Length: 216
Image 1 (tube, rainbow, N blue to C red):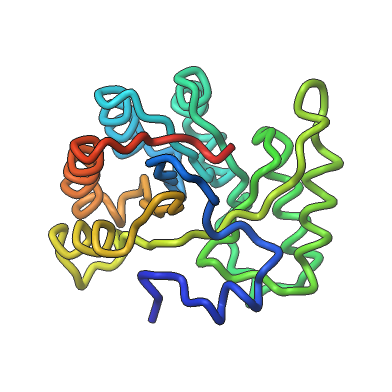
Image 2: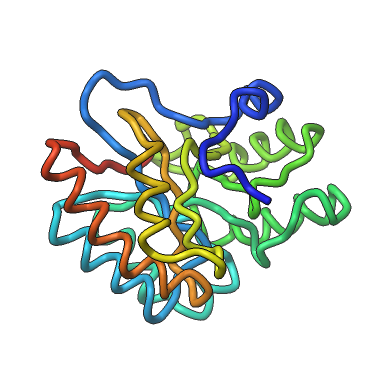
């Protein structure tokens, strides 16, 4: 079970995390989890390029090691990257220190102040520790950034094998507003739905005058 629209009670429990970005302008924040992927990520980058759109990619460490050129391309094209653990761990099912160590391993080559927990599952007791860990890894011009744990306002549902691409599209357009953080996945599992839905979402909101930006 999952919530397409993040419910208020969940946002209240995890109120120190970033769920939506307060804006007055027509801006939407597209995010992509689980890459880099040899097919899905180049497709996403191509679509974003067509609409002069920027996005945020929450990358799995082991996939960065397998696809370093694609990871570098994400950054080169002006998108943000975030840490999504080294091995896509469920934060509710593994010991907290093991989880932190996994995040730290990924931070060795994903240099960012942003983190998103796989499956959105994170222990309350781990939040401050993760932020402190991310903060400690920032160097150079990034050293002044504030560590953020990024959740979402809307799930496209592209990972759900039971639904159609059309349903994914409806999930997004029926629930997204100014400042919404929307989740897609650049992964094998999501490919059938994501590659049909993303172009329609970009076109739909572009026609309505929206801009697509990376997490600031």
